[in-house]
Length: 303
Image 1 (cartoon, rainbow, N blue to C red):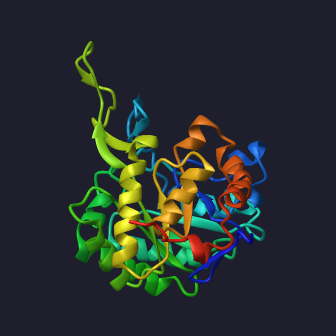
Image 2: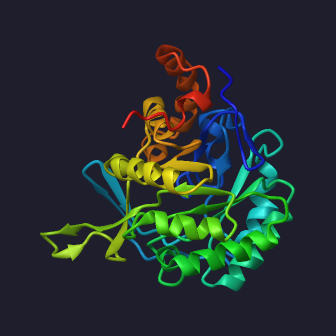
Image 3: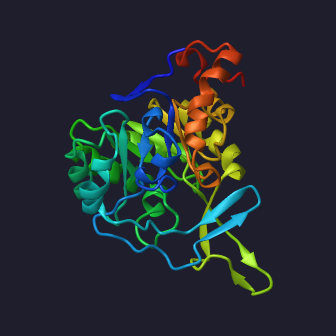
C-alpha cells in the first residue's frame, strides 16, 4: 500500500510525524534512526526571542502519563534558522516549524519570517500551550482570538500551509476548530496536553515549580481520539491527531476516527527511536488488516 499522504499541499511519505516539544530540533534524534523515514518533523516551539522556560522542577511522572511545565524554552527563531535548520534533511522530509507568541502581531511576524525560509515546509501555530503565562492557551480557549491569530499568520504565510494546534482544555473543541477554519487554517492538529497537577504529600508541595502543567502520554489517548472524532465531523479540514500514540495500532485508531496523519509525542521520551519504529511497523499492520488505501480507512469507524 502507498503510505503517502497529501493534505493542503503538504506531501508526507507516511502519516507519522513527531510532536513539537518532544523531538528537540530534530537533529538530536538523528542518532536513533533515519530522519528521512519519517512523514515529517515538527520541531520544538519557536518564539521571536529566546526563552528560558519555567523554573525547575518542570517534569513529573504520573500513572500512564507525564506532566510538564517546560514553558516553551527555546533558542529563538533566528538561531534555529541559522544553526539547526541547515542540519536537517528538509529536502527529503518536510520540516514543520511550531511557533508561539504572546500577541497577534508577534504571531504574524514569526509566521512571515519562517514562511520565507526554504527549509520550512509548513507552520504549526501553537495556540494551546497551558504552560506559559501570556498567550498560549488563552488564544486557544477563545474562538474569536483563535480566528484572529490564525488569520494573522495565514495572511503572512504565502504558499506555506498553516496548521493550528488546538487545546482539549475547552468546553467544546469543535467551536474553536470552526473558528480556526474560519480564520484560514489549512490543517488542524489536536490535541495538546490536558491541564493537570501532581503533589507530594511528604513535602506538601506541588511536584512542578509551576504548580500546574500539561498531562500527556497514554492517559490522554481516549481524549485525543474523542476530539479528533468530533472535529472531523464538524470541520472540513485535514486533521493531524496526537495524544498518547505509542504503536502502529494507535496510529490506525486515530486515522479510523478521522485523522489524516499523527504526531508521536511523549513516547519519544520513553524510547528515542519510537517514531522510527512506528513508521516501520505501519506497513505490516496495514497488510494484516487488509487495508489498501487511506481513503478507504480514514474515518471509517463503525459507530
